[in-house]
Amino acid sequence: MAKLNQRIFPMLWYDGQAEEAANFYCSIFENSRVTKVSRYGDRGPGPKGSVMVAEFEIDGQKFTALNGGPQFKFNESVSFVISCESQDEVDYYWEKLTADGGQESMCGWLKDKYGLSWQVTPSRLLELVQSDDLGKSQRAMQAMMQMRKIDIAKIEEAANQK
Image 1 (spheres, rainbow, N blue to C red):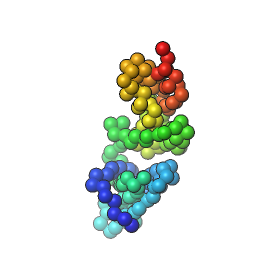
Image 2: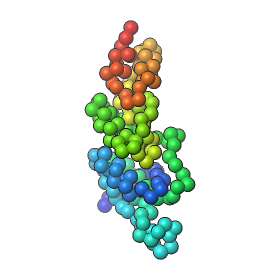
Image 3: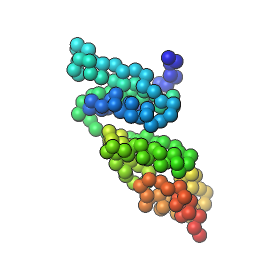
């Protein structure tokens, strides 16, 4: 296995679902794989043989999922952004990440079934809200603020209204 040239990587805290979560994310994203699963030994603190950490990669980005216990939960102060080039991509990631108990939020944000926050963001949205045309930018932003999953066509339609 080639060594990743990545000094900083996310460590995600789970309560017993680290390996399941790693497999879930790898099933959604292309070019992904679980690279290593480490188990607790005789010294614990988890039950001997249970998963301690699951390491995985998504498009070359390293992640580690830790079974740390019930003390900490995910919240919206940290999220992962998925840059999408088409409505089909937006729809795909939205459907996969909200499945089986995930929750929709506003403005392209959602929580997956583990409570981890994601932003499913079309690149076209960013182009429009960062437009030098202040009116276009404001209209795109106002349209986005009314949405859960981002609809690129509706954002463009709102941005282009005169």
